Length: 384
Image 1: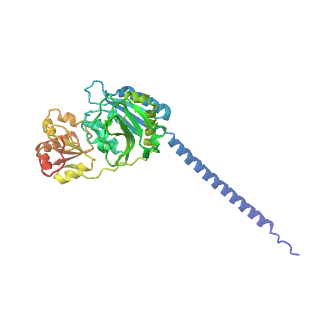
Image 2: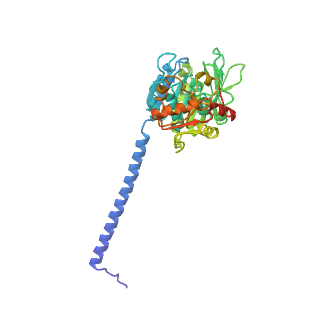
Image 3: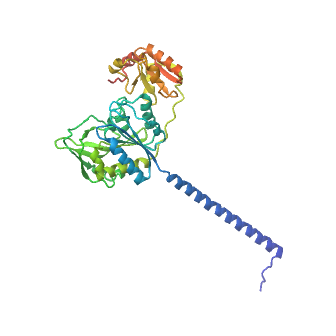
């Protein structure tokens, strides 16, 4: 019979000690892993618990958005716990200003109900900057023709094609597009409902717009009334609904609330960094000027007279007459750190404008050497 080997007492003590050390180390490591997971989870839920900041902007009188947007604001606060900021057009039907637009800097979502405003360049620049930020946009009814000095907004940003609307005496029958029925924006929206508002004509939409709802009136072709779009990666939802009585319709309210949640759930594209060039003050030929204009990163300032501007101008340009006594005052409202593309008819006045802007503290102005005359001669786009 083989007897088991007995280890010396000191060896047993050492092994026991080592085993205890290993168990303690493992236990400490396990506690550290668990703590790390808990901390990471806590951080995640803390971030998730941050309420979204939603900026609602009312800038029209025809559909009483100054009455309905505060109602929407209250619903968003109550149902989503959102932090809402409400901005409204200045008092007076001829006032072309919306105070407080700096709030767009901290917005997670912007909801617009604006109609045919000619905003000061510093204010329209805030909308341009927000649209380029990658953060979502939600447009209601007249938002399709929100800006008189940014006509491309409808097609390029909202993905629309507003032309006019049908007679106000006809209510609109709204139907869910069958192939879009499973979209989260349409959850709880009735397959068919009636809006008392007139039907907007938006056909045909740009290729990238994805229709969710169609509207119709007797004797006329159906028109898209709600769709999603992507503007350079920015998620966009628009609906031509928004009549005051629409805010009393369950399906409309569900549509808007769903659209808000869908918008906030979309990944936010990081805004592209502005190129290092152009910087400083210099002149450019038509082709270089056109490439900078096509990048949609810079504001074009047309420093000719208002009558010249009305006769034809570069699409998206802002008119700021350098010969006007108030030129310096108006220019001083612009972002002095941005780059501006400046032109006149032949290059003389724009050179003068660039010098004045330099004296005002601007950092970067690119002047079109042959002016608008050279632009037209090269066959570049012109709008009236």
